[in-house]
Image (cartoon, rainbow, N blue to C red; front, side, top):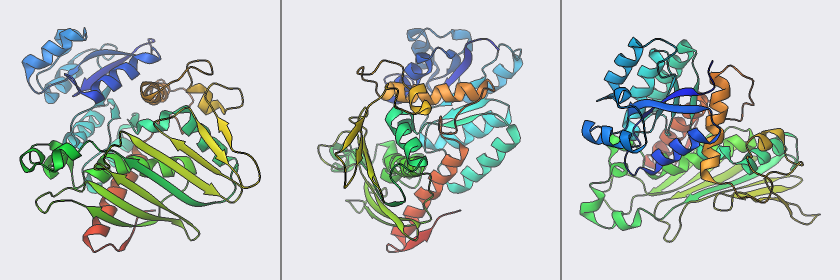
Length: 379
């Protein structure tokens, strides 16, 4: 197989933040080359953007179905191998399903689908296809998150008994309080975003972070949403109590109306022998706390870190790495899988994470709708 994996991109054109993030991330480790795609539903804008980023116009397609049709006509050693799905939520399922059914690898934005039923269908399609599916829960790519995961595996903080995860943003404040504006944003439109805005967009990241770092599964939850206005059908704030075991409990707090907050994802995990605390806005610092010793600070790039953490560190200690590097680590893990190389199961979120995420989102909506009752999650 040639060094560069042939990558197609769906969505993410223009000034899309997620588009920039994925394109830069795919280039960082020199594993991918963008050879085609459909960046925009408007074909003129699609081609204009392709010129901007220097992608061959003969591989820019008018729509997704045409991309599949035309790429399959090409010899196998020329066609797109993997597609990144960066579209609004409602397009994730149909695009990922058709890609899998036609033998393509998939790198997909979260949430993976808009319903749990779709997620289960996609899971079956993936099993049948036998190709690679990576879900971009970006924050699992940070070296210090990976370090925390590996240390917890080895018992560094003993038996876990309490987890506190939060993801606070304030960006929707300027929209939600204006009736006209809030009716025009796709994230507040159930037809495009799915059944949840806040929990479906950012709360699910906090949920994924809890399961990724602890290695435990959430078994049941109780949720309380805030919609702020009667005509707003989508949650913009929520608090979730979680039970992971009889004696392992926690809370997931998520908000898009936390005034003044930027991208406040953070997690604290408390065990019988110690605790960890990590914050996305200061990602190069992992704090290990104890009742009997001074607080320790772990940083990327040092020999004391795990192999998984060091594999995701590109620069010497003291050189800050950020969100682009974190996403790049997920692309790196996917590249290893596509090439049939060995990789750590923590290198990229999988189809299972996508199904778990949709289970979480639907369970929070059900709990809130039924007047804040406990709802069981799948095993």
